[in-house]
Each structure stands twice: as C-alpha cells, then as structure tokens.
Length: 386
Image 1 (tube, rainbow, N blue to C red):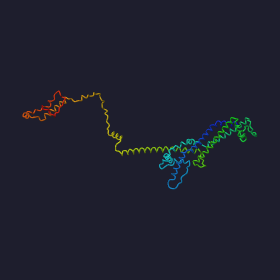
Image 2: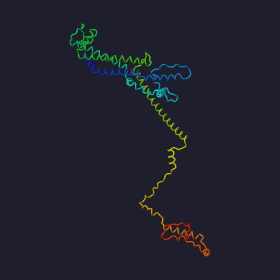
Image 3: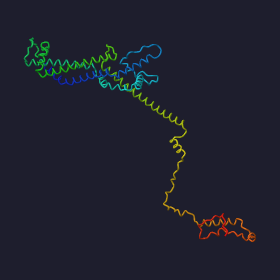
C-alpha cells in the first residue's frame, strides 16, 4: 500500500548516509590496496628474489630444467613449508638471509602496504550486492516522489491512462519514458522526498563509478601478478595471501636476526681471544693485569686477631730516655783499657835499673780525670814522653 511505501522511504532516508559512507570506505580501501600492491617497488624486488632462488633450486642437479618465468601468487603461502635437511631452515629463511646481506632496505617492504591488511576483511561481492540494493530502494523512492508530486496536483501534462480498479494508485503509473529528464528533475524538486531522491541519485552514481574503477584496478592487478583472465580470485583472497606472506616474512626475519646476532657475538669473542694470544706470543713481558693478578696470588691474607685488645692510651717515650748512660759507657771503656794494658808486655825491673832512660809505662786510666768523663782517647796510641 501507499503508507507502507512511505515508511520504507523514510527508513531508507534515515539509513542512506551511513550505508553510503560504509560502502564508499570499503570501495576506497580496495582501490587503495590495489594501488599499493601495483606501485610497490620493494615488493616487486622481493618477488624477483623469490623467483631467482626458486629457479636456482629447481635447475640444480642432473638434467636440463628450464627456468620459470613467474610463479602463482598462492605459492607464497608455501615458502615457509619447504625446509632444508636440518628441518629448521625454510625457503623463506633463506630468502630473508639473502635480502639481509644484499639489500637490507627491502626488508621493510611492508611499509609500502599499509592498507592491504585492512582490505583483506572486505568482501567484494557483498559490497556490490549492497550497492545494488541501495539502487533498488532509491528507485522506489524516486517513483514515490513522482507519485506524491502528481497527487499534489502539480501542473504537469500527464499521459491519459485508464483508472486502476485498486483504490491505491500504484507508483508505476509515472514512467520515466513518459517525460524528459528536465521535466522529471523539475517534478522531483517540488517535494522534499524528491529533493532527497535527487541528492541520493547523485551520490550513488559517484559510488557506482568508484566501484567500476576499483574493479578495473583489481583486474589489472591480477594481470600484473600473472594470474589468468579466467581466475575467479576475489580481492579479499588476494589481500589475505599478501598479508599472510608479510606475517610469515616478519617471523622469518626475527629468526634470522637472532641467528646473525649470535654469530657476531661468537666471532667477536673469537677475535678477541686470537688477538690476546697473538700479543702474548709476541712478547713474554707480562701485562699490567697479569702482574696484579700474580701479586694477588702470591700475597697471603693476614688473619685478623679478633681477640686482640684495643690499643690503650700510653705515653709516648721521649728521645732522651732512649739514649745510653754516658757514665756507664766511660766506665766500661776504662775497664777495657785496663785489661788490655795488663795483658800487654810491661818492661821488667832489670831493664829499668840498667837503663835509667826507660820510664815506666803509665796506665791509660791515669790520663782520664773524673771531670772529663765524656772524653775518649785511643788505647792503641801510647802517651808521649815528657
């Protein structure tokens, strides 16, 4: 009935803006993802390295094998499955290692594809179906607007048709063929629902152009990747393959970086050991560290006496108290000289009687007076004769 058509038109008017915005965003994401994949130079070089390594492996060994000119996009998912003899190193690990040693800037090719991980969740068929549904509902709104303009008795030359038996006048009574485009636009501008229909038609037409452009770009992208024209691959399938490849490439890159860092540590340690050995072989002079180590090894630790008493405050002796007593020293010298004199040969009494010139020897202690106890004389020199 007419009331139901008006309610549907109002609901469509309320939901139109959000629906068109979501569809435009999805179509724009797919279009941008196609541009990123086709314009990425680093991704193209990565695929070239994969192709070259694959050809080297396939053509190795006996027999003549032709090199492949391309590979399918789905084969990217199998690069982390082909393993070497150690069951650890995969084909993708070797690709990452080659890229790391030759063109390290290619490792960040994911920076060229920011939209691809988002576009792999968008289903192209669903977008097209929703757009067709919007166009169908918009056509009903257009017919309802024309019917409302007719029912308001707007001056317009309508074709004469027989009256319908139904009480409600169907919107199909106003056909597009019965009037020109200018007349239809003028008729739609006469009502609010007609103004909305004109604005919605313009936006939907622009969205349809974007959809057609995105479809052409995706077809060109499949051709760019070497897929056949009969390929039924959808955009979300292609984007999902590329996203999975980027994720696997990142995992392999982390593993390779870890291995390379371990090798560098071992090489640096080995180089240091070799340099130390070379220095030792050139010179036998021990180094400063070796001298300190030898001194530490030779020294015996002094045990601390835990039972020792703390030092007491004793008076410091003076220097004069440590000096010897000079009186004792002189008496010792006197006794020594006397003993030496007694032991020496003294002149006999006959020599003295026969030779009056010979004077008896004087005792050395006779020369030392009590007042001059600090003076010393040599015992070896006899006193001079008067």
